Amino acid sequence: MASEVDVLVIGGGFYGCVMAQHLRRHAARVLIVEKHADILQRASLNNQARVHNGYHYPRSLLTALRSHLNFGRFVKEYRDCIDDSFDKYYAVAAQFSKVTAQQFHMFCQRIGVPIQPAPSEIVKLFDSRRIEAVFRVVEYAFDAVKLRHRLRAPLEHHRINLRLQTCVTRLEQCPDGRILAQVEGPDGLEEVLARLVINCTYSRINQVLSDSNLSVIPLKHELTEMALVEMPPPLHSLGVTVMCGPFFSFMPFPSRGLHTLSHVRYTPHQAWEDRTRPAIDAHAHLEAAHKVSQFQHMRKDAARYLPLVGECRYVDSLWEVKTVLPASEHDDSRPILFKRHPELANLLCVLGSKFDNVYDALAQLDALYHKREAA
Image (cartoon, rainbow, N blue to C red; front, side, top):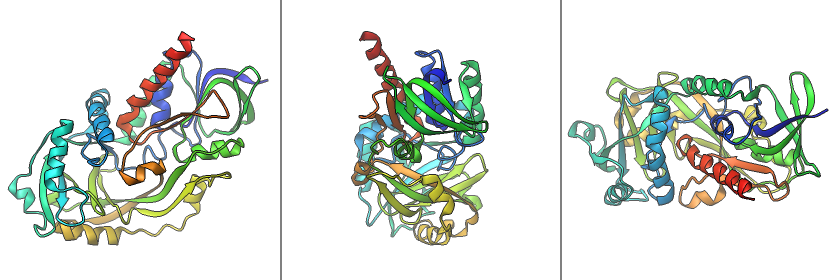
């Protein structure tokens, strides 16, 4: 006999956990199923840990504005998980940048984020032939391990059922509108009846759909490497982004006491798109991939702009699959996907692009339930 819930959330990443907690305002019985042995184990952990304030998106005003508007709320709510102990700088390259220093400064003023010229001792660290200008900004990093611990308590407090090492293998429509989910966990297969299912599995969104013989959502995936490094002393307390084009960024990674180093050219190792069934299982693809670090290329190119980066020491790499909407490629926008599946009315597919924009997804959840109540 199938167990019954009001909402089934597939995926125990940051978005899945926060949305499940929020859903207790509307639903009494909420269940999260998570493939791994704990929450926040995949993309929520293996990323640059940047708390965006809008600076990263000068070619997408809407993404920048949403990031800036959500920045303060995220920092306030998760203050105990935030690292603001470093100084953050954005540098604009003199060649091949898609924005000029003047354009970047005007963009920051337009969205209302703090920006000021970097002090001379910072500017001197850069190669003046390759960098047009350097700006001091306000941007932080989060500690994903602290965030994981921070999210566990609300799940317990709101009596949200969390099942780990558990996958949804198939979804089917029932005559009464509910969805029957085939769930496989440590104790074997079982069935769960849900009034609403939220597919919040990031790079595996289409895997769930494909396994259920449902049409997939056009998505682009990249197998990515984020290098973890020790920066030389002058760069220990800095985060730097050189933009906007084929450039690089390094940020403190609080949970490991290191810095991440990423490069637009060398961080992606492979790319593919989902257009039709069967979808490629992103997790299986990542596990099977032959992973050879491109750190040396990242460091060599970054040192052309900031010579001291050449002294950083490689420690490890974070490997993950990054998933975006194909339409985002032309302007680097990062909209949230919040889509009701056309073949399963009570199935929502949610793809979050950045932690701090989770509030946009929560607002859409509230709107969905208000519409239901009005009906």
